[in-house]
Amino acid sequence: MHDKTLSAVGFARARRGRAAELGDILVAIAERSRTEVGCLESLVHRDLADPDLFVCYERWASEEAVAGHLAQPYLKEFLDRLMDCLEQDLDVHRLRLAGPAPAPDASDVRDVRDGPTDPDDLDDPAETNARYVAAYNARDIDAVMAVYAPGASAVREPGRAVTGAAHRQAVLEFFRNEPRLSAEVRERYVVGDIASLVVDWSIEVPGAPEMSGSGRGLDVLRRNERGQWRYVVTNPFGTV
Image (cartoon, rainbow, N blue to C red):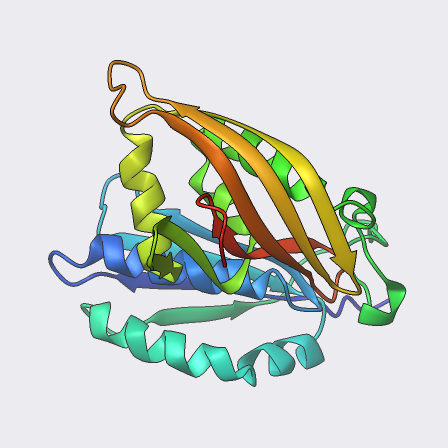
């Protein structure tokens, strides 16, 4: 059978002093792409010898999946921001397998009507809390951001929330303090595809008691088209 999957590799070089911003945008695009039907893989790499150069790789199930991706309204906004950070035009090469394809994995390609692909995400939104804590304590920024829905807000202090690249940067900066987080879901409420969690949390920062603390937070989650629970608001101060 003819393999219908398509791949693309893109090379993006940042303007001087804009590499961090460019990286945040590229990662945000990849995270959003991975939520779309037909996206098999979307990764962003940074060149070890040239930190201003990013290499992006995507793999899609079909031409139709690529067309659907390119038609997403969010993509134009991201690309406009991307162009402002580039030293030169984005260099994209579309690829197709040159040899026989590996045996297909039925879990890779799905229709939204197939329902959730991850049983851990199906019934209990509290699983998202557990994943967040594990990713946070591992200092895995990509895994932390992956449990948030696109456009989600994270409250950093009462009355001030961050989203997108600003959220990612805030977490990265706090990681430098080597915090250790624990969080236990005390209550959960689910109505359709919306859930709220009441969470008791504590955080310890070695050698910095002023940064350590505890509290009771309130988080709001939404179940996406893949059946995965993702945060739309996280508020450690307990209000939304």
